[in-house]
Image 1 (cartoon, rainbow, N blue to C red):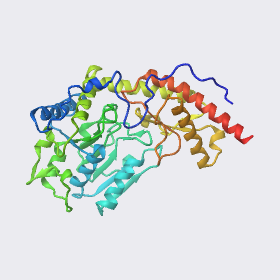
Image 2 (cartoon, rainbow, N blue to C red; image 1 turned 90 degrees about the vertical axis):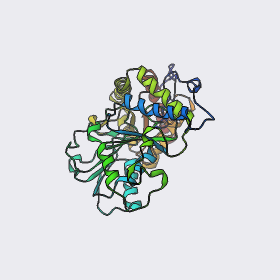
Image 3 (tube, rainbow, N blue to C red; image 1 turned 135 degrees about the vertical axis):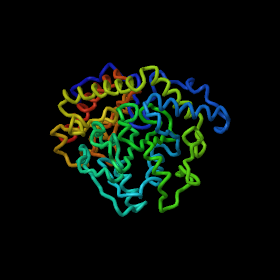
Image 4 (tube, helix red, strand yellow; image 1 turned 30 degrees about the horizontal axis):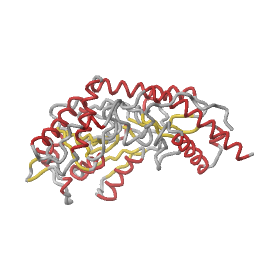
Length: 392
C-alpha cells in the first residue's frame, strides 16, 4: 500500500503545536519548584516574581528603557483588546490583515467598537497586503507574524519614524524569534505560551512613550471594563508596569515564564533565540525545496515565517481533487502522524487553506524537525497510495 517503509528515526519531542508551543529543551516540572504556591501575588514574594518577569522580558527581548512592560489578563487576546479599547478613536485607523487573527481585530474595531473612520487593508492567505498604502498619519493595527498563514512582515522599514498615528502590533508568534523594530512600534503584545513555550494565563503589553501620552491625553467615548483600564484619575496606573497585575495571575505560570526567560539567557538571549528559529525554519525550507508535493503557503520567501510554518499540498494528483477531498487528505495525513506519535497538532488552522502548520520556534530542536520531515514524506506517500487504492 505504500512505497516507503516507516522511518527508523523519530522526533524525541513530537510537539509541534503553534500554541501552546513546545516546552524548552530539558524542561521538567522540577523547574517550577520555586513557585510561591498558596501565597498572594500581592505578597512581597509574589510582587518580586512578577517584577522579575518584567525585568527579564526587557533584557531578553531588548525592549527600550523608556518603554513600559505590563503583565495583563487573558493572554495575547487580552493585551490586544486592552490596546484597541483604550487607545483607538482619537483619529482614523488603518486595519491591516492577511490571516485569521488580523481579521479578528478588524471585526472588533468595525463591529464592536464601531469606529466610523476605518480603512481595511487586506490580503488573502499566503500574501502580504500593499504596505505602502498604509497611512501612518492614522493609527495602524497589524500582526507582525501571521500565525495562521505563515506570512510575516520582513522588517519595520515600511513604518516611518515620523508617523503621527500609533502602531499597534500583535507580535505573539514573532516575539523572541524575530527582531521587532521597537522604534517603529508603539504597542507590542504577545503571550507566554508562544515562542518561549510558557503556560497560558496572562499576556504582555509593551507601550512606547507615544502610547502612554495617548493614554493620558485621550479618553475613549465608550466605557472600559475594569480589566482594560490602564489609567485612573487621568494618570497611568504605574503598578501594572511593576508587577501589580489587574487580576490574580497563576504563580505557577509566572514561574514557568521565568524559567523560559532564564533558559533564553543561557543560550545567548535574543540572538540565540532568533538563530535557533532560523535554523529550524531552514530544515523545513530545505525539505520543501526538495519535496515533490509540499509547498510554502507564503509565496514570497522574504515574508515566510520562521515560527508558524504553513505548508500546502501541491501534488497535482491531490490538487485535482475538490476542496473537500483535499482537506480530507490533509486531515488524514495529520491523523496518521499523530497515530504514529511523531507529530501532534500540525493541521492547518481551521480558517486557513488546508495543509500543515508546523511550529519551528526556538524551543523546538532542529534534529526533531529533521526526523519529522522523514515522517512527512512517509505519511504523504502512504496516504496517496491509500487514495489510489480506494479509487481503483
